[in-house]
Length: 624
Image: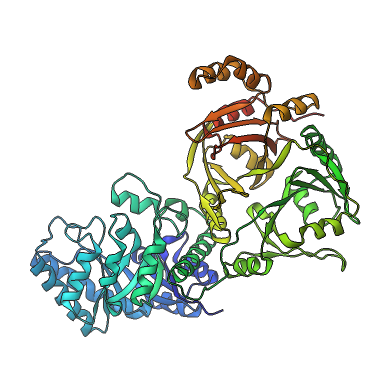
């Protein structure tokens, strides 16, 4: 499919040698690359060889960058800078590009009067024109005299030389809260390139914020959609190029970061096109209607462990697959599936990870559109052989190699009836639905999976939280359905601490995956009492927590006593109350949570450190 925009990425954005970066960029599907000067200087290949390598990989060289400290310098220093620029023109010729990035001057020796800046920019534009080259002038957010793209544009406009144009960088503009409407004043033929970066909103100096915390579109907090829509309004049709400075990315997988970047650009361009009422470039983000099922891969012995937990939580085995070693357990609107087949994905998953969640089924209103969007975003499909009369459910790869089955909401009842014929109806209901699913991953993976969820699904993201583990800090961030009911929620968790619970899970599990599942209920005390009578191995909470709870919230002693009796944790905010309790972990891998929400919309983050400390006390596996 032809791309609706011209994609590019700066080599500084990913890890590796320059040759490795170029191969990763080409493999991800970009059309062009910005060559960062330090990457070129440290490469063993010559500029001619790098240019040839780009052409062999099908990459255009969009730009050489950056050139620093020119306009406003004293005459002697400016002359030296002009000689450096002439040498860069020769390098650009070897690379096969005609464009170089000129950053606004940061030197304390630079003058800032407008006449000098205009004169110097006019002079360097003339030199560039003589060499058949172009200069893209950029306002650095921390520039000594030019730090606003409106000022940079006024200089470029008034010089009005064909070899001098403007660079727009979303970070430099949005970090300074420059109004997006100002883009409307820019002449599109003078906008030579646009560089993209998202970022979390942080209170710190602009230089360090830029150099360490930029991220891919969709991974941060900037209003990039509005910025992008303004560019489309003025008719900009040049490169959409990523320039990302991020320590995590430069230490991570070049191929994954490159793929994430292109995915973010696709979502950004599509969103901006939709905002202007133009023909969508892909189907809209998927709005799941709920969690249709959670599938556990388990050997027969592991299946017994899960069976013990399921029974204690009130689930009933309501059916068996008509031809496979697969069981269906139900309660309320929850379907849990235990797959003990001796071959296939579930078996392979169990061999690697042990008893665990291998797949999640999400009910969607339009399967075809969901798959088309996944394909447009380069999200891998999954398929395995099925019998001719078996129900076909399309699936895509998810966290840790697990699957998302995209279940047609209109035919889900028929699916269950065909695959699990004669299933009994579940009895009394205590648990009502899946509240949220918590996935643990390497800290370095979190931004990648955050983008995956918000790109594919119609999800909003919550602010990232830092949670105290006895052995370090755990970072947690939720993605959740945008509608008020929030039928689907995931929490993403990771830590850089070597011995934090999340890290120990990754080591024990051999990769990322589901670490716990939370079920919702309407009466947590009744559910807890039944679970206790049925032998659920509760996570025990110490008495000091409840003494503090009574004082902190002014709770009635009788309520606190009931909470303590059932190891129930409590939180409250201006919107309502939250009750939660946990099981012990099955085989040190996966544990279960029960929650009751009374107007409360968060996840009990204040209790997370209490839970982590309680879990740290347990090293022995659950026994039934």
